[in-house]
Each structure stands twice: as C-alpha cells, then as structure tokens.
Amino acid sequence: MTTPCMFAAREGNSITLASILESIPDASEELSKQDEHGNTALHLAALTTGNALVATAMMKATPSTSREWALILNSNGNSALHIASFYDSTGTFVKALLADETVLGTLHQEAPNGHNALHLAVSHGVVEVIEILINFGAMVDETSIEIAESKGHEEVKKVRWTRAGGWAEGWSEVPA
Image (cartoon, rainbow, N blue to C red):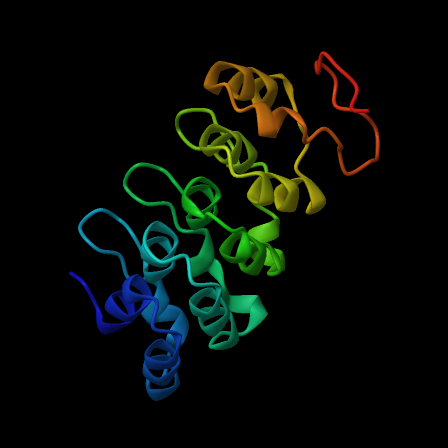
C-alpha cells in the first residue's frame, strides 16, 4: 500500500510531505508504514529523487528518541542508508541521513549480501558519497578496495584517508 507520505517522498516533494506529517497525530507511525516491497517513505526517497530536504522533513517531524522508522529494512534487507549510499549522486541525501544519530549508528550495518554502506557507495563509484561516509566514520577495508579495483573506479582509488587520518591499507600507490 502506497501512502500519501510515500508518494510525496518518492516525488521529492518535501513541502507536501512536511504538511502531511504535521497534519497527522503520529508521524513516526506513518513513516513506519511499508509498501509491498517493504519500503518506507525514506527508502522510496533514497531510491528515486534523493532529495535531502525530504529526509530532513521526516527527521523534523519526529523526536530524535522515536526514529526507529529510519532503521527499517525492506524486503531485500536493505536500510534507507544502504539504498542512498548506492543511488545518491551528490551525497546530500546520505549526509542528511547520517546527521541523525539513530541512522549514524547503523553506518557499519551489513545488508544481506554482506555489504555495508561504504561498500555500496564504492560499487556505484560516487566519490562525494564515499568521502561523506568516511568522514562520518566508515572505515576503508579490504572489501572496499576489492570492489573499487573490480569495478575499475580509478577516481575511487584516490579516496584513501580513513577518519583516523591514516592511509587505508591495501592501496598500491601514494598520491603525489
């Protein structure tokens, strides 16, 4: 079942979404609703428009202590962060998600295929998303390196710094 919130999120309409959420008594309950594929409004926004204002509208509509809806996994076992890490082409949606402590706590959570948000971002090859994930605490591991090399993402191989400031192990060359 697609709800009005899901429709507004999928279309990237943050103003309509905010209005809907303000008009209902329990925004958390509304944002927890899932479609036939287990996607919430947050999943749908990450899959389609990636409008960071949509994610922000959802976060503002609920108190920080009741954002379990942001952690829901769809029927494929993916969180909205997993989806956004793969589909976000600018990093703004991922950054909006990680600004919330509830979502930030899932940064290293693995999808059923064993990949975490960083692995998915490396697979898609968007440097901005990779850098945002690393800046929020994602650690470059062997799997990240293997994915970058197998996909031939040369620009991704240049992203080497871990949050701790050291070189990620496994990179074959040091930048000039």
